[in-house]
Length: 204
Length: 204
Image 1 (cartoon, rainbow over the protein chains, first blue to last red):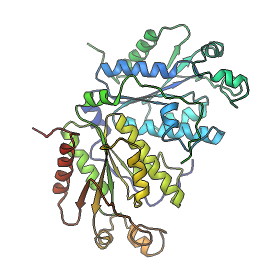
Image 2 (cartoon, chains in turn orange, yellow):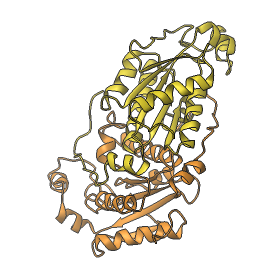
Image 3 (cartoon, each protein chain N blue to C red):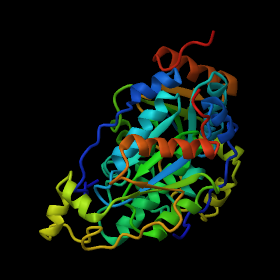
Image 4 (tube, chains in turn blue, purple):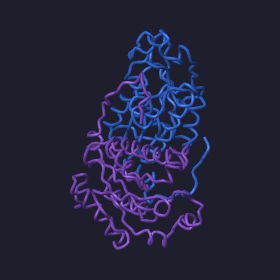
């Protein structure tokens, strides 16, 4: 993405990310959920948020629904617009991380290159890629939003898993098998990762 | 702005804004600083953030500099791009407000219509417009970034106050006279406003 901006200089904020992390009593990070439509990304992200909030952690979930109606309401579903959508989510998550928040993003984000753009915008260790692994057959069977039916009817072009590829993460920080694991098992695996990474303290 | 998005539905987050405000022990809001280049918006926003942070308030400053290098790095300075820049800042501030943060934005944002778009995206009372009032002659004399000099030399087209209009707010929540008031007086006026609006509690 070309940097067109000129005439701007960096301000050093008096209050730093580290200051905000101290205030919130935990470190900030991005939990980037990726997986097919219906693989449970949004459900899991909200469930993890709920768990963390009860521990006193400052959190926020970004998902296709609340982003598409606001920040990205000017974007459609062309190749360019899908890339730009994920780019903006990455930038937004970066700013929220600087604000001292654990940000959970729940987007299909099917392409490795797009996820890597978001990963590379933040310091190593800030970006935790969580692959919600689930066979497309199961996702299609769930079809919570009725999108697979529409995709099969040809009403949605380039639908991930049907008419457009999903590039599974090669080295995700965590794989959650949302077909076989219970929601609670999945939550616990993510919380364990956060404790191991020193992002939150183990609940006492 | 047309809403191109389809195939999306709203998720009801289990954790609400009110929950996050309870956790942070204050309400969230947007402090939207507007004024000429050199009127002190960014300096004041960071100083207010510093003051609030020391009171234990969760804060974040968005300014032309950190936004232009990231979320809006694809935008230039055409009329369309300037409008889109401010629109995205408004959406970002909205999301940060939902995340329970007091967000301070420091952009010239010279046009009433652009500021009103941001204002109208959030519930009444969330958007506090703070007009950093300062004569253009004083701003030009300060010329911290050397931009007025460049504008006078014709190197920056449509420079607010020189070759492009600034539409002063008609009903801002607060006017700060950054020519005559000290920085501390300006900070105190803003803190007083936040207490009056019930956003933060009076420091004890």
